[in-house]
Length: 143
Image 1: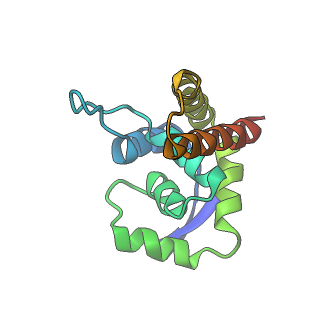
Image 2 (image 1 turned 90 degrees about the vertical axis):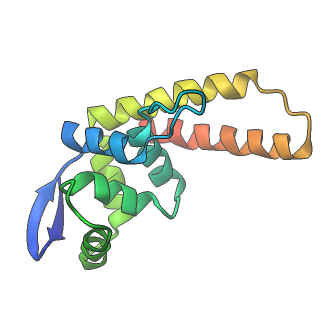
């Protein structure tokens, strides 16, 4: 568990089903063909934390706090944290079967995309290289 100070009170949080559900609700991408959720928000939090994405901490903490938490409250909670919040969040994610499964699902679908992609331009080659590197980082984080 990770202890966060939310609204002036210390409370322990963990990446459980509620935070998994909230992450998918808040941060999932949409299918461009029909607008439905891809339910990949939890997986994207895992990926963004292990790759050092700037939005990762905010998104992870947002998924832990109550749904009614405002943007300012999330930022205040992060600012009050004493320690390396990024590393502590990664450790907590490792304990969550829900988020681990979501990361594995993300890996599976991204791997299918990478395997079937043919790089024709320099931009495509760079994109493919970045995706392969990201896949490798996520794979390491799951072991």
